[in-house]
Length: 218
Image (cartoon, rainbow, N blue to C red; front, side):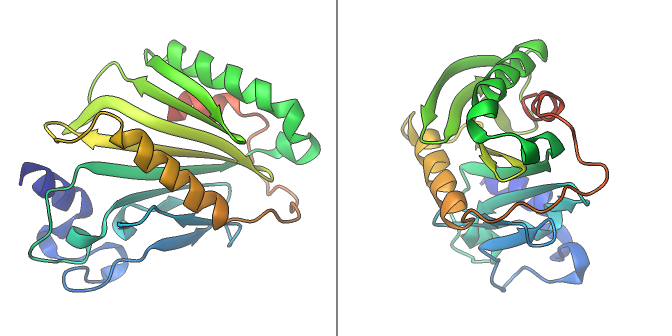
């Protein structure tokens, strides 16, 4: 029950109202969200929906949190949530003029250096298709979440996409469940965003991925 209350606090459900004045209780939470002028679709794995009140977006970046659909839709029999998900997307101007092969090794190095530089410990990492999968442990827990996170990083055109799965402290289940959720999240994101022609980068787009990773991996 504690995890459910924390999630409700995060959503701002004490007033039963999300951002934009839309009532969540008793409604249906969206399963996908278009961001960055429709350039990306955020789609969660089965059972997870978009937390509309937590979306942050500007011309070059977007952050979209996701949680279990049942409590987001106000179902009375909703189980205590175990995981909180997020998608962070950044337009990186330099990627528009470089091939994916040229940037793949740089992305991995940047991610590792950013994590270590900000105090996060990389517990494991491996390649999953075109994505880099990492399990990290931060220096301090965030709220009621544990310090451990599962992360996926991949390129989509001129966008760097970072997915994360965080577990609530005290949640029960198998140790590998976080990575299973992450891989399902990754599959949904890649299926929901087929490759398209890259548009010109808008003013203010970052010129490299390193700064983005330093912000994400802490």
